[in-house]
Image 1 (tube, rainbow, N blue to C red):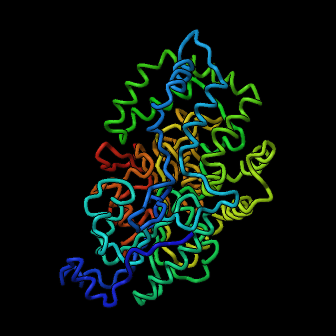
Image 2 (cartoon, one colour; image 1 turned 180 degrees about the horizontal axis):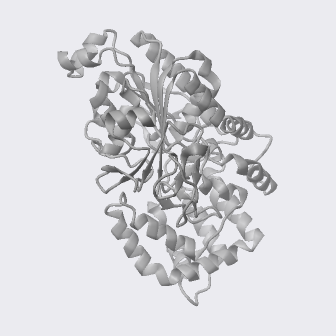
Image 3 (spheres, rainbow, N blue to C red; image 1 turned 180 degrees about the vertical axis):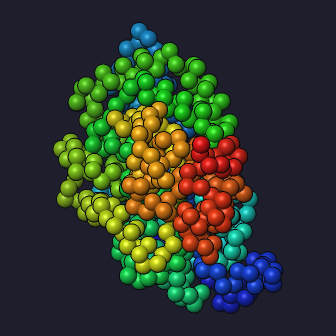
Length: 492
């Protein structure tokens, strides 16, 4: 993929500090700081056709705004939830296909995109791109802003990439990016912060390049490196249960982080509560007809995401072989394609994540993992009763925690067990370096909050990133609950 470089590194670092508005005091405080490279997650960076030109046009975006242009589809959706209404599956599939085929998200059969498609790619620090972070209030940009507050914007870099592409290929681009930062900053090590899918990119980089010994600190924020259970539909694990749908709506609306969305969810739940059973029954009936299900995969799903490598690479390790079998059987996946070669490679990386994290820590790298919980899974698979951050299952983000099913409690006890009896961190790859935040949804880190400050401190503090040290120095417990303002308190 051709990368358009919007700007280049400044020749003189001192000049860069002047233009970024850094004071002499701030410079003296952070001049020796290790450069921090932030790696964003899925969809956090816009993808363009002809990026950096006057003809730039956004692509790679899931846009459902045009759904209102298909009244026949609206009719069938209403038939799904209406008692006594019949669903015309043929018309439903055709109209869904009309919507998804307008979304320019998919890649070719080898998982590649055209050479004129890419992202705005910055090789210089964020001090030259204040428009990205200065007014940021949430998500990756807010974390970037917090990092800039901690060590100065001249010390913070943003690695951007096309989220649809193969994770291992993206990791090789990150490798070159890191080398450039080290060269221009004249340093041997950098700090890496991987958010969501960015955590998967870091895992692939570590798997391939750990022997370079160029990582000072490595922070994983809600990482997808071990997959997500809502990707199980690739293995034809699709389940609609009214109980799970209500559970999801309730858990999200009651979540301290839901904010204004909780009102919307309550309204939706109130309007459709009586019809959830009807819709679930009808959808479950549709799933009984294999020919209809296969049409949905081939006519609705494949054209929009069938060749997106990164989504395939979000399939949990224990589900991958079945997903390949099911999808190749119906012609959704070609096992002779370049796409298959790519996703198989990351699947192997995924199987080594635990070992790699332990080895990284043993090398002296300050490794930290932040995983969230408190919301049941998206109710479309048999695993929807898992605790999640609304997208990523807590057991995967934490790299191995034992987690109670939503609404249940663990019987275990000990220092690694949360007071609410939901999490047992003893089984994590790094039990002494993994934090859990309850009621904080996926990547919704707000600028200035205690939750976001935790991430920044894990990335920039000179202290060890261990539960014991961070609790003593900053009062952060291993298990914390966030209120609506993301103030953190120990779980009780």
